[in-house]
Length: 50
Image: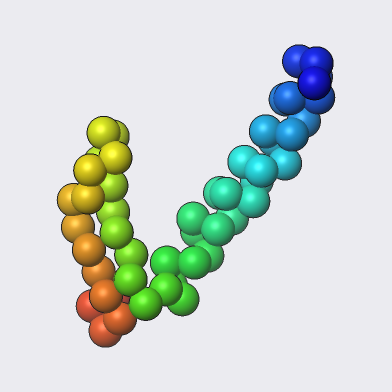
């Protein structure tokens, strides 16, 4: 892939990822929040969502 093809590919999946991050936590049975180093900082389970 050339640079333009890579940029287009990343843009497509970035849009999907942003949508999923906004949409799925409200439907999930469990959400694990991560810090900048990808360590779990908080776990929420069904019934614990606000």
